[in-house]
Image (tube, rainbow, N blue to C red; front, top):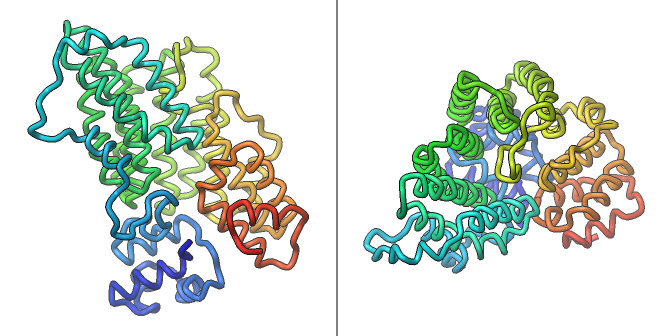
Length: 402
């Protein structure tokens, strides 16, 4: 696995910048650039990564690196990814499918399959999801083309959720441009569905893609504008509150990453207060495909932002004693454990960090292997003077030398 410092040095040299020039453009210290490139530091906070990416005029994903299964080595893309691309953007001159084949499709079954797809995504089962998702998109696109107007609207709603899922998967694979292509199509389908909450949900996903591209102002503007629209339409159900909350949290996250941590903290406090109303409102039939928003998700995001902004004590305090809502997906629980481990590492508590990582390994081994942050934390712990029991086993699990 290429070290962050190696990627940074390579991109800096490609841009023709000295360490001093990059530091000046990015607004960070030369010492930060030097220590990263000399591998004296294994990681950097997300605001620092965004600043360095901006100075290099690249996406932040270029610094973080590709997911393990999708290396940028110049080789042809794997067949599964090509199939996903074709599903998102069908060939221009491909013959249309026979309309009568849509009669064989069950819309309730298609909806259930898409909900199961979201469960695969939140469980980090990306390989299986990439295998089945193209078929879901094709089926939904077919249902959206035939039948009565209400039937087509139902198909458009399914197509929107399938394409939104493709956008999320593409972001996880480091393909943000493909993600935006999927999400633009998801937006069109959502607008054709007649469901007033579908488009705002997709906008939240677009804002996340913008964040990954360091387009923080675009992300904040979109998320907060969409949240205001939902609020004007009336928040009378758990689904509408969850959509509003997901968008509002996205705006708060963008504010924090833009350097407005205190403004973000105020917004998160309001979001957590509003989330307490969710159990009192009418609930959706299937919550797996609705925006993730609850008191737990807000607190998890607050812990994450505190860690990213070098406030480990605050992060540990926020996480202490919190009970995670049963509907919180595994991916969010994973981030919480990673951030707790990062915070304990930053305050010099190697035992607390190892304990959090052991819990992560036990509960979400696939996510632990997927996240480069877990590898970085273990590297930092190995570089320290205190090696608690279990650290070497964790290193072997993520294939690090001990």
